Amino acid sequence: MLESDLNERSDRLCQAYDPDRFARDSASVTALVRDYLARMSAREDPVWPAVSPDDLLARWPDHEAASPATMPELLASVLADSTHQHHPGFVGQQLSAPPPLVGPVAMVAALLNNSSAIFQGGPVAVVLERRMISWMNRKTGFGTAAGGVLTSGGTLGALTALLAMRQARIGGDTWQNGLGGGGGHAVLVNAEAHYCNTRACAILGLGECAVIPIATDASFAMDLAALAAAHRQASAAGRRVVAVIANAGTTATGSHDDLQAVAAFCEQHGLWLHVDAAHGGGALLSAKYADLLGGIERADSVIWDAHKMMLMPSLCTAVLFRDAAHLQGAFSQRASYLLSDDGARWYEPAARSFETTKPAFVLPLYVSLRALGEKFFAEHVEYAYDLARAFADELQSRAEFELLTRPQRNIVCFRRRAGTADSDALQLRLREAVNRRGRFFIMRTKLRGAVWLRVVLMNPATRLAHLRELLDELAGEPA
Image 1 (cartoon, helix red, strand yellow):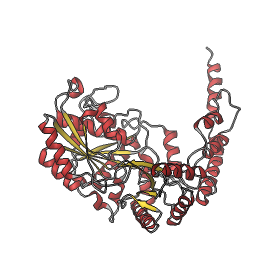
Image 2: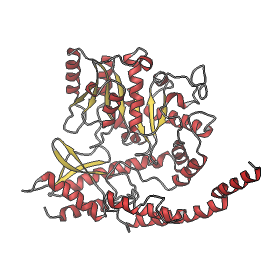
Image 3: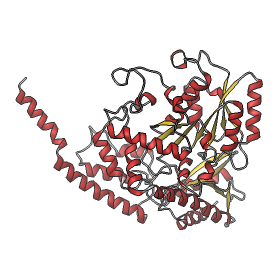
Image 4: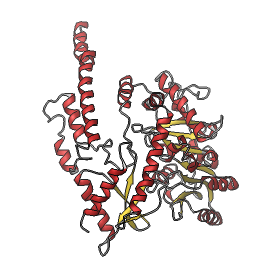
C-alpha cells in the first residue's frame, strides 16, 4: 500500500477535525442556544412537545434514510423536540437547569475525552475529583480518614455504597466466593426510599427479600418505633440485620429522616448506616437548611448528587465514606495493564469505582464552584426551599386545593379537591391537561393509596407568580 494513498485518506478524515470549521459550527450553535435560552426565559415555547413516542420516532428517521443536514440544523431540531428544563414552568422532575457556563466546559471535556479512571488517562479530572471528594466530605462532616469517588448517578452510587457495606458487615471474601446462598441478612429501609436501594441489594446477592421497609410517620420520615420493632422481629426470626438506609430527602415528598436518632440506633446495634442524600445533600451548603441533615456525619456512607441541587449536568454523583478503607475494600481486583500491583493509589479511581472509561463529569462542578462561588449554590438551595414553603402557603390559602404535608425542601405534593368526582382520576386528568397545554410540566405520585400532584422546584427562574398561574390553570379545569 502506497504511503500517498494513506496520506490522502488521512486528509479526508481530518476534514472533520478542521479548527476553522469547528469555530464556524460553534458560533452557529452558540447563537442557537442563546436564542433558545432567551425563548425559555420569556416562556415563548411550550415546556415540552406534546407528541407521542411513535410520532416522534417517525419524525426522526434512521440516519441512512434521512436527507443531509448540517449540525446546527440537527441541533435546532433537537432543541425543539426536547423537554425544556430552563423553562420556568418545568416543575415536574428532579432534573436541573444547568447554568449556561457549563456548556463550554462540557464541550472541552467531551473534546478532550480523557478517561478519568487513572492519572495518565485524565490527569486534571483525577486531581479535581480528589479535590471535590475532599470538599464534599468536609461539608458532610467526615474527618480526615474519609474517602469517596464520583460515579454516574445515584443508582450506581447506592450500589457502590452497599457493596462496601456488604464487605464490611457480612465479611468473608465475598468478592471471590460470593454469598454462598447468603440468606438471612436484612437491610432496614425507609418505605419511601428510592427503588435503587432494593435493586442494589438484589444485585449484590442479598436478594430483594433482604429489604425490610420501615413505615413512615405523618411527614413521611422513618418511624423510629417501627425501625426498632422491625429490627427486633428480624432478629427474632433468625435474620442478621446488617444495615439501615435512611433518607436525607425522599424522592416523592422530599422528607428527611431523623439522622441523629437513626445514627444512634445503628451505633447501638452495630449496623452500617447509609444515607441517601442524592437530592438533599445540597442543603449542606446552606447555613439556613444544613440542620435538616444533622447527624449525617455519623453515617458510614452517603450519596450526594451534584446534578440535582448543585445544578450540574447529568450525571455527577459523589459516594462518600467516613472511613476510606471501606471503599478500598469494596473492590478486589488486579489489572496490571491499568492499576498498580502494590495496591491502588489515590490517583487510580478505577480501583474504587465500577467505571473504567469514566468521563470527566467533575469538570463542570469544579469550574462552576470556582467561577460562580459556593455562595451561589447555597443561595439556590435556599431560594428553592423557601419557594416551596411559599407555594405551600399559597395552596393552603385556596380552599379548592389540599396539601399533603408541609415541605421540608423543594418538593410539594398536593391535589385539587374532587367533590363528588373520582379524586385519583381527576388528578391524573389535570396533570395530562396541564402538560399538554405546555405552559407547565408537572408530575404525579401515589402515596398512602391516593394520587397526588407533585411539583419539584429546581429552576432559579421559577417564581411564585408562575406557581399561582399553575394553580389558576388547575382550578380552571372542569372536574
